[in-house]
Length: 144
Length: 153
Image (cartoon, rainbow over all chains, first blue to last red; front, side):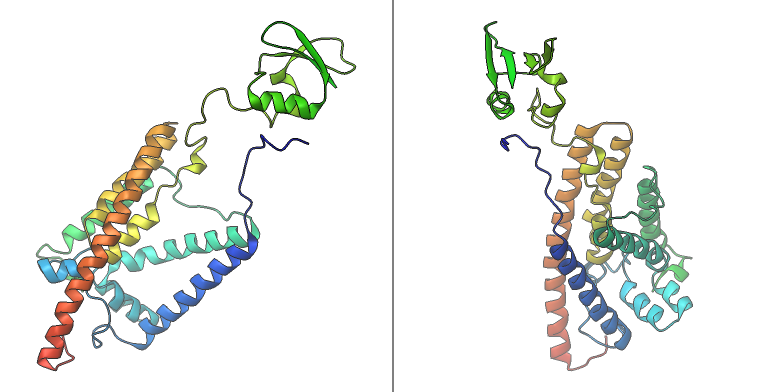
């Protein structure tokens, strides 16, 4: 058979997918351990927000590391106080990560919520709105 | 075996399927070329031969994206850039990422591809500028800690 003109669809390489997933899980576990063991408030080796250092304003990600630390210790209230947006979006991000890993390993797709094309715009408004609100007077509860 | 009628109107063959594919690949035949498979009584066209369904080169150059599944939106990457690098470039990337989905929903593949590459570009800008500024700020703070000898910030 002449193989000259066969549509080339790259075959998924299972061993490579397993390697990437294992690496992702190892790095994630190491990071989670660091964020559990050390309080970013008390240790200087956590990266600081450059935007905050320069402007003095809180960016939408500010307080995220402290929120993660509190969350890993089961303090949901303190986590929300540090970065409500990140904490509320974590379950969603976790689901999409799980969905991706599941698809890579089994080839099957889990349901994808928020698939409508307008949801990214909602997310956009949420992030910008959160960034603005937490810097306004009267919104102390959104600041870390 | 197949008989074919070339662009010059002359009959060629019989030729094998491999030879036929070869000629299609070389552009000596196109989708409208007449072909008579062995045992058939009626002439048909190359486009209608099921055994050549995968061998046809597209008539026009293929668009960079044939379907929505091929256009990455870079949505999660732009969110991570925004939240981790704390740089407004991430917001720009999110806007372009959202544009990808919206353009795909109306079938504008070329527009979606354009937004996709812009989202990708702003993700990279955000990542690189983010890393540079964070390293600079981190170095300044490290020197401040070293100078004061205090670990409390």
